[in-house]
Figure 1: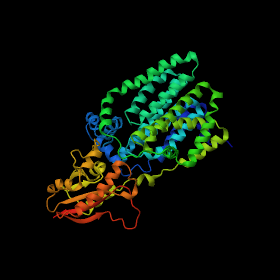
Figure 2: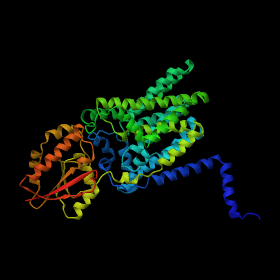
Figure 3: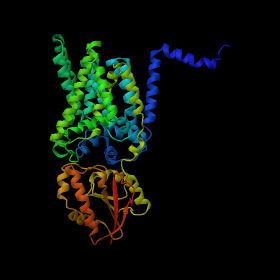
Figure 4: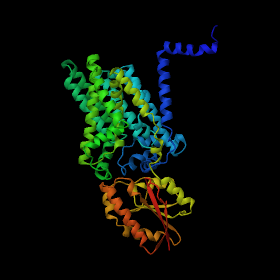
Length: 522
């Protein structure tokens, strides 16, 4: 019996897909992006943590004012400028609206990984890189955070891919893409400099190992690509130097050597998957020399850039600690390109390993993302229970929490930190912050603030929850000491009466973030 038209529809669709490789590619990428979108929106409404409060606060300043404001923060401007525009287009600064920018950037990384992986190492490598990008837990986490990490991951991917095309496969059309992506990377996060330096070392290795007749054109193109990136970055250099003199990362500790391994395994979603991808990926990449010399050279250059970039970041953090696993976002792109190329070249074992990794990585980890801070809950409790009223004074002993408190409490209160009144509640001033906090004794600062609190008004002291984090860096250790000193100072000040702590933890596990102690001015 002849099949019905409806029964023949799947067959006709299948035939059309097979007849049109472009349609098949579009369909495959659509499915990958859709799966990634599902995975990376399960916690899109998660409440902000400390750094996200800083992001939204900085982005609320005028577009042309943001570069000047960042003299207080120490960061480059690109992400904040983009977030400023995004909030205007999205119609607000809510968690889901601002997280959506990071989600969109993570989605863009999926087709970018496919295109770059395919051009560099073939179609199967492109699909593998795209699938890995779509499910990587590290990117799933930071795709739902109002920070620059999804952007720097995307730019690192484009910069590394364009580098491989321009200097490995010698596709000179990729030079402008490389220069712009590298400059944009530097304008997004200071760790972009480590990948850029690694790419520079990778280029030198390619020059050194090139055939004699290839060296001069390779040197010329290197000077063009890297030189253009430097020229594009030059306008920011004066601000960078000013930031370097007065801001920094006093909250960071000097990383031990094993911190490299810990960060890489975190990037790879765990020790087991990290080892699997690393061992089989490298084994697969070693076969490239037999397959194609240009592809092998592209992999060599990207691999050198990845390894030396991580090593340079670790060495720099020995001299001036600025180490955090989340900063490894800049290395996500080159790692995924190499992993995709290597796994598909290790035969059936590599393909099985790829499938296993994708299954293990397909985890939204929404509970982890939603548990980053309790500041929203503390702010709501204070307001709902009438423990804070308009024009009350909020003092945070953990100063950089100020912008987040301003976000969740709103503008109807007066804000100060452990160093005194805060002139701009949407940004924390990191300039010489360690020295200023050291000089600001709690009793002296309280005596300055107390006259501004009238009888019957509240002083709400916000204190960090110490037992949920490491507090051994110069800044965090001082914040820990100052927090205890502030609580004792207000407790023993006869001008204030302690009313209530918020929240009351009881026997439940301590969250991350802040706790409040409310005082009434007598």
